[in-house]
Each structure stands twice: as C-alpha cells, then as structure tokens.
Length: 84
Image (cartoon, rainbow, N blue to C red):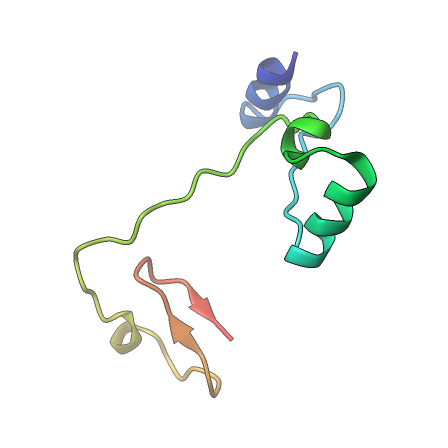
C-alpha cells in the first residue's frame, strides 16, 4: 500500500492519505529514542518515502553570477539552491 500511495501521488491521483515524511533535530531524536526505545523513527512512523542523501558533485559551478542580488549571508550550494 505504501508504494501505491506514493505512485498515486506522483501521478496526481488521489491517494487514501498523503504520503508523509519529516526529519527530527538531534534533541527531538534523543527524546524519541528515550520515549520509544526505538532507533529508527522512519520505520516507527511507517513513512512511505525515505530520505536518500546525495553526495556533493565534483563539478564546481558558480551560480551566483546567474542570480540577481542575494540577501546578506546567503550561500548557494553546489546544486544552485540558495540558503539564507
């Protein structure tokens, strides 16, 4: 059912419920482990999707020249995403 729920969502069809995912900050993760005696909150909450980290690229691209004025302390990651 999890797989079908995600596929229906990607096809813009109406699933039985919206697939969900969230991340816990370190303090929330410690509290979760303490209260549930579990290590994996993604499994505990039966998330339909999982986060898969992407390794940094080996290509160095300067996206700042293609972006207009950026707010102070903004940085642009290797994928072109701006963070403030």
